[in-house]
Length: 216
Image (cartoon, rainbow, N blue to C red; front, side, top):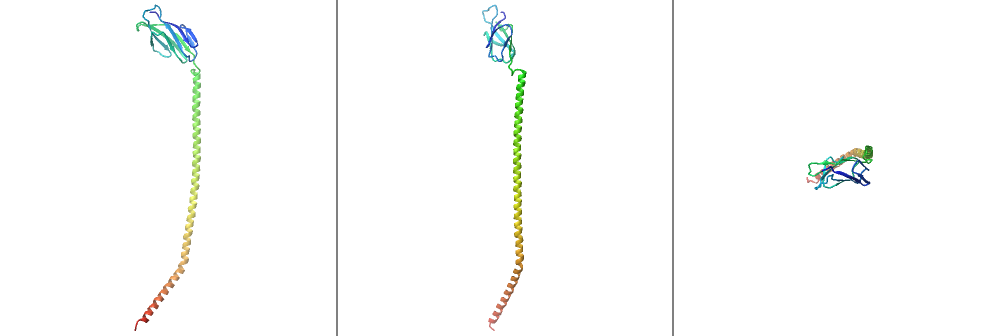
């Protein structure tokens, strides 16, 4: 069994012979490899295995299928390898085909750096916006607390003044009561003494009347 032959490399924009390197535009829709068994022609069809280095480093068995397609390969350098065997033990490889897929600007280090810088800028902007928002909220809360504290102080002052007025009113009433009691004490004492004298005289008169009425 001779080595298999890669006949053609096809892609959306055209095709290329199976020999020599192939260069494709970035993110190709597909790339397809057509191949066939080598000479001499055998009665039993060979089995094939393929490998696309740069995407996988293991052989992939595809049986007697003579075509392999890859889609949406990212930018980079690849090597397509093909081998065939009649018994699955002894393998014969075809000459590899070098495949280059152009990188998009996002796949270039410069593009990735720009994307990273843009993402970092967004994160920094978001952090600054969030920090500013928290600062404004803190300032608003501080102003609200200060306003509430001022209101409470004012209310406490009003309560103190009201308490002072009540105390002054009570003290005035107490002083007035004391003055009234002091002013009424002497007249009441005089009236009490006079009433006691009048009571005593009345009792003496009653006693005299009783003596007069009693028979001798």
